[in-house]
Amino acid sequence: MSNQGPESQTILVVGGGIAGITAAVEIAETGFDVILLEQGPSLGGRVARFNRYFPKLCHPTCGLEINFQRIKKNSQIKVMTMATVKDVSGGPGNFAVTVETTPRFVNAKCTACGDCAKATEMEIPNPFNYGLDNIKAAYLPHEHAFPMRYVIAPEALANGDGEKIKAACKYGAVDLDEKPESIDISVGAIIWATGWKPYDAAKITPYLYDQSPDIINNVEMERLAAHDGPTGGKILRPSNGEPAKKVALVQCAGSRDTNHLPYCSRICCLGSLKHAAYLREQYADAEVDIYYIDIRAHDKLEAFYNKIRGDSQVNFIKSKPGHIEIGEDGRPVLCGEHTLSREIYATPYDLVVLATGMEPTAAAEYQPPVKLSQDEYGFIVAEIGDGPQGMFSGMFSAGVAAGPLDVSMSVQSATAAALKAIQAVRGQAA
Image 1 (cartoon, rainbow, N blue to C red):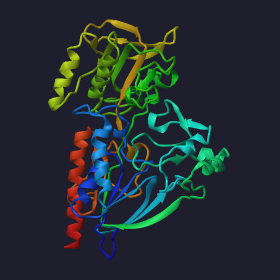
Image 2: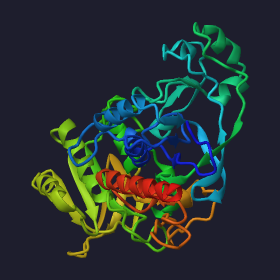
Image 3: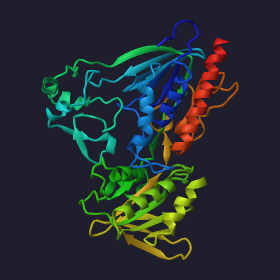
Image 4: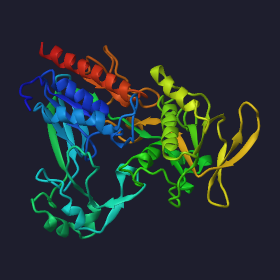
């Protein structure tokens, strides 16, 4: 990477989800050096964990693999995984950034053969599947991981399995002496693409999310439906492994609620419509009830809404459920009042899926170590002008870090941020 001189034209992209990846490849393909930083062990973010995504209901590999190939073929992109920005100082053209890395305990010699996983019996909750199943303590993040390299969980070393795992590797890829590192880099502009996390459904106490395995959230439903998920793609009740054939999808779970997320996250309605489609594809006799306040199906995606609405086994119930009870048979029971008829209901289900909203990571989990302009909800505001964020600050936001967006809108946002960052470093060099 070339960042000599007082004014660096290298651009740092923080976050390796779809927005960060898009920004990085767009910048590099115009001839600028890029450092793409990801906190986790592989790129792809939340999109990599979807079963399918709009607008074409593609599998995540459909869009991500193309971008991974663009990264592999472009020497101007440097990818750093398991890395976090810990400090930022300086200004446009000359940011001094301190990056801290977390040990993977596996180096670039890894061929992803899997012998390290065979050498340990220890298991940990699978982070890729949101803890719905367990994975070996030496693991590949997922089947399409980039980089395609194993990770050894610290728990394996604490358990005394480190030497066994190291001895099993034929390629010398296991490095048990790897330590956290602090790396200083100089960049000319920074794009914050730190993404989002699902709102913690356990905070919605009347919905008993943390008291029944058969009450899950929408991202967990994506993993249940995925072929590489905890059930091999079968949508089953987590409690007993039986098919989930009577399912409730609860819209605005914690969203548009001043006690939780006051805003609409834009994607939840269509996500639930997609989940209804997953169920109907698997089970001819499935019955799906969608509890909603309003349905938001923007632009061309209204056709998908109309398709699902036309299915006689998908029922749209205008109501905000008041609470959930656990029946004597262990099934969750949705309780509330129909908005239009005012009838009281208490309906049991095999599975309840809470459509929780998107909370910005910069508010919920990772606080950037530099003062950024954030709105009242924690989304990073990218302004053009003399403010604390924008063209003259050399820092920009992209994707859901900037606001609730779907995948296509996140890509558009990232492309715009890439252009602004390029303009910023060119302006400093002029």
